[in-house]
Amino acid sequence: MTVTSTKRRSIFIFTTVSSAEIFPLEKILSKVYDYKEMLHNSTFCLVPRGRRLGSFRFLEALQIIDWNTAAVIGDERLLLQIPTTVRSIHQDKILSLRQQTQFLWEAYFSSVEKIVLTTLEIIQDRVFEHGSRSSLMWNSHPGGLFALPQYSGYLGDFPFYYATLGIKPYPKFTAVIHAVSPLVSQSQPILKLLVAVAKSQYCAQIIVLWNCDKPLPAKHRWPATSVPVIVIEGENKVMSSRFLPYETIVTDAVLSLDEDTVLSTTEVDFAFTVWQSFPERIVGYPARSHFWDSNKERWGYTSKWTNDYSMVLTGAAIYHRYYHYLYTNYLPTSLKGMVDQLANCEDILMNFLVSAVTKLPPIKVTQKKQYKETMMGQSSRASRWADPDHFAQRQTCMNKFASWFGAMPLVHSQMRLDPVLFKDQVSILRKKYRDIERL
Image 1 (cartoon, rainbow, N blue to C red):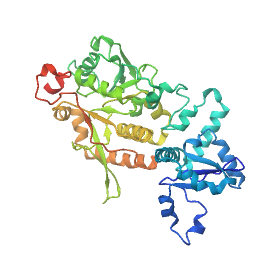
Image 2 (image 1 turned 120 degrees about the vertical axis):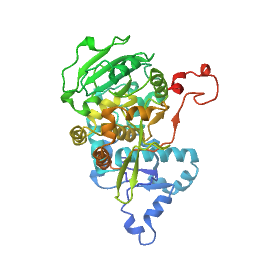
Image 3 (image 1 turned 90 degrees about the horizontal axis):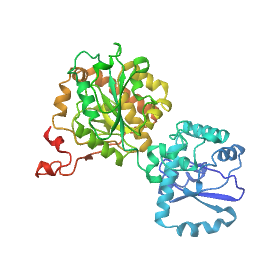
């Protein structure tokens, strides 16, 4: 990372990062050394002040970044003292500097697009100070570009700052059921799902997003529940409308559901308790994975049930409501337009977004043993799973998404969270979530 200083006699000493930009000095050193190898093997990298006027202006625009957490700053008149100074730095401090340098590089400097966007966003924060991001937002993960000030100026409204602030999310969730089929029978899966979710002790309200071409059903067609049920029409009846930041969502947590998802109240309760410990991630049931197809030289998508996964589909998943706002306002129209045109891949795009923000995988929780067979028994879902074009579209989506993000943000995991005593050979009465094993 090449950075020049606005202070006339100061010098930056950065810990090196794996993707560092190559300095002009390479032209000189490459005659004697392998400059890239030397850079990778170095613990610190000396960055003296520059001469070009543009470099000063660029750094001035980025002064909101706390360089003290990523670099050692010294006086260039004391150049000979630098070796002694850096040798005296403890290894824990060096690790901290490296981690912060890596974060700053990936968040703000890893591409020309990010450099320009970062500069413009900081300028905007300075012009409109009343709605600007705090220094903590800019200098801690995931960075200022993912913490949109238009959403909120309060750190507690963002899931990735809960641990820093020592707070917990609101202990209730809003269920959003995506409905695309007309309501013609009282035995349809959506009605059973609605009743099961409403019985959850953590459910605050249920929103039925009506993306069906048929008119809204009359109120008496919906079952009576102890929590409010709000039926709203989806905007333009497109897939991306399920991720709009609806004002009716008043809780931190959103339980996203497809209309034909089959879940019990117990499963919903357990998933929500898990999410409360991981509020920045997607937590849920049906998992999928990605892989690199070396023959085709492109990313592949698989729905095989294995111990490895990198996505949790939003047909039965819990996540923070901020991701609705980020999906709507951060992602480009081209990607959302592709999702809406195909009526597919919105769940993959949401997983890409959350993993790009958190740098972490989603979390899969215990699901009933018959889940696969039950879901495959649903006609609408079965037809999609059996359709080869469905998977071809999803693979095309993955490669399109990865291209826009600049890399593959999905992270593989083999972790599944189960209730205590879930499979232990003990009395069912000793188990808190008893119904999961019975199903």
